[in-house]
Amino acid sequence: MARPVIGVCGPDKGGGPAWWFTALAVVRAGGRPVRITPKRPRQIHELDGLVLGGGADVSPETYGMEALDPGPKEKPKPTDLGLAIILLLLRWLFGLKFGPKRDPARDDLELHLLTRAMDKNMPVLGICRGCQLMNVHLGGSLHQDLRDFYEEHPQIQSVLPRKRILLQPQTRLAELLRARTVFVNALHRQAVNDVAPGLVVAARELNQVIQAVEHSENRFMLGVQWHPEYMPQSKRQQGLFQALVKAARD
Image (tube, rainbow, N blue to C red):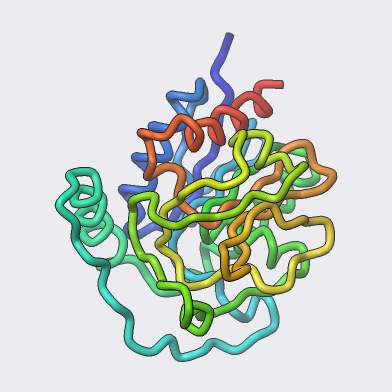
């Protein structure tokens, strides 16, 4: 049986580590990943499923807001664990250093693909920025800067699963992860604010920041704020890619 073709969206510059780890997860799940960027687009009829990956902030203009000055940004703290060190180095070399803060060309490409994917009821997995893009596309808004939410709870910035989130009962995500609470990584400074019509909250942090959304009617349209591709050691997180590929095959 042919492997379902899964389009993995990313930027023209940077994004190498995210592509490699996402492609690995798709292959392990039984799919065939193809890389999509503004300079290397694909048509929706070439795909069986779609991954909207992480990266630059979604342009505030797409949800009717002005860009805020993000202020000084803390650098990720290195750890003595091998996987974290490798991921931090790769993201610094290929993503954080050369990637743009905003990428309007990528916004346009992914919004177009998402529109067509929804028309075809194609399975879609949104990761970090991709989760935010889903919400914006359907009429929701974003928190541009989450620092004010972490006055009582520490703001975790780590490629390791250090952030505890609560899954909402009777959601597809809770069914897939088979848990009420899980630990995930955190590399974002933005998140879903107003939830778009058609989406439901699937997970939150302890401070109520939304960590996942899913479509209430589409057969598989799930957005997570964390990076499951950077947790290849987790069977639960690999299960998200397995569910995507299964839906693409069906």
